[in-house]
Image (cartoon, rainbow, N blue to C red; front, side):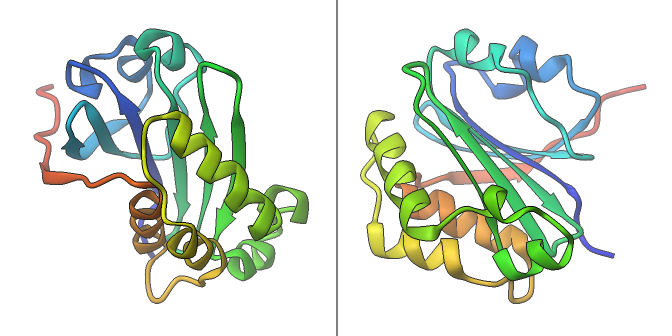
Length: 167
């Protein structure tokens, strides 16, 4: 059985784990990295911060849910209303029964994703973006999540495991 959980990408001056939208989730933060004020947080199990995270950070947000390391759904939104969604490892997502309209057309999704990234102040790589959107996991969907965020222009460094909260 593979990993099932979420990756949350947002910009904040404090650690993402300190945001109210993250603290209210019923999940355990597992891993974290940053690229300036941009951060990526891995959480288990699947966790979905509500849209208040955009207001709290006043920045674009991307949330990816990985299902058993087989495929991932991705949703992104920005304060100006630009949003997009897709599935990574699209054939596997279809095998799981994810509707085709949720998976999206890679050309259309790539254009929206690139515009979203540019609006967030990033420099997306259109070729790498298209490659990530059509690739199948080999072997892990988590690798596709990292390929996607890299193609969008993020350069996360210094990642590390997070200690589970004290009980």
